[in-house]
Length: 84
Image: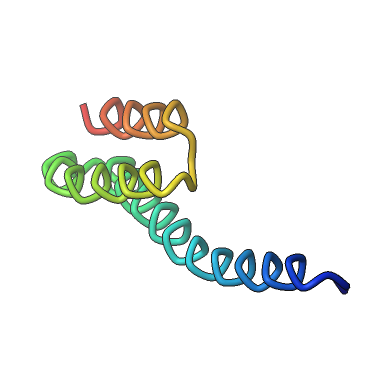
């Protein structure tokens, strides 16, 4: 447990950020998994229609510094190749 008031505040802030980031990270994982699942089943048309939503979720996570920009690019490339 922190002793300094600044450390206590930092801990409170990091816990709030952790909760906030968890939702975005969960949305990201679900979007990627859903597109890959549909593409693997062979329904390419549906997977292609799901791509813009998945790309949007990936870009949002990147913008919020939850994932690195190269990681975001890699995920988008993976989805694009899976639906092609």
